Length: 464
Image 1 (tube, rainbow, N blue to C red):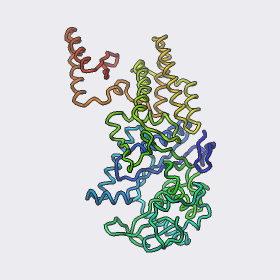
Image 2: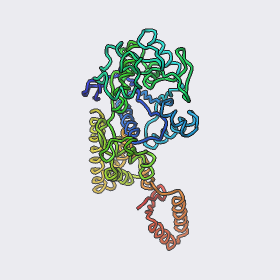
Image 3: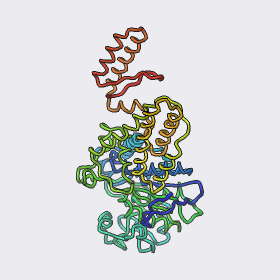
Image 4: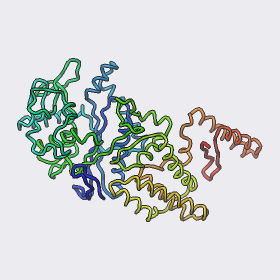
């Protein structure tokens, strides 16, 4: 398996630190608002990595943190007059629900910043004892000049954006020094520490939590893979790497992976542009599986231009998979098609080339339809097809829904209840050999845009 290492700027052979285990840490959301397309893109990209590693036989420890103390959360507290816990609990639960809708595998660990304050304080104390961190009037800062390798991750030690993100302070030793601990301000959220009441900076939480919960202590690298969005490479990941090197004398990660940006109709997604699509709004019109399929049509490192026209085209590709799944509905399974399995994993082992993987699936679905047309009674092929569709769900995370329920998306609960009552009425009429009534009910369902089919597993229905 080859992956693109963001530090080396090239594809490299993936070799885990330990033979059969992979430890991954992906930077999670700051929980002050609902999930947007950027969150979905990152989550799906690293979920695919998780699945592909499992398909290659590795045990994966997948960790994603929640930043539940931050300026944006404090601002939300003041705007809404709600407690920090109320706000962060609300958005953590909403994020998890969105991830479930996108068919993201559960994480092994989900540490929260507020539950790990002591280990952050201990790491800051360690850096202060080595004169790598220092205290000034508004907090404790990391002295970047003390880290000879600072800038090695992103190949830049400073830029206008990084300095703009850190409040200008003439007391700092260097303009690029960043806050490890911010002292309490008026109407702030603050915690006790040996160096003063305040709260942690953003970067320290990941270094401290990786060191505590995930790190190998006897290896040159603490974890196998650190991931996140491309916007995190600098300064966030650069600063994490520096803190860990200086505190533990080990490197944070053997490999660094970053997913590309999402643009909406050509504009980079941002709150300031007013085009930051919330996931919950898209999910009103399209299922999470459709959104997942669409975001996988481009390789994870590429920037992704989201538009509804392409989303609809992508949905039609997924529809084809479910239509072939309907053709073997309720059937038994045998073994996965070996040639297809090899082709799919070859694509995915090439730096998660999901675009090629999806094209491989399209080709397989087309051939499956041709075979079913020519040999409708080929039981061996049907069983192989069922197994292969399950393998696609296992590795790609699509195609696992019920073949008929998939086509019921967007129908209200009231309408579903009405449809099911009509189906029950039709079933009772057929049992009583009242075929005239049964036909009338079928016509009524057709008028509602519903198609019904009698199968060995009972009556199934879908939107026409």
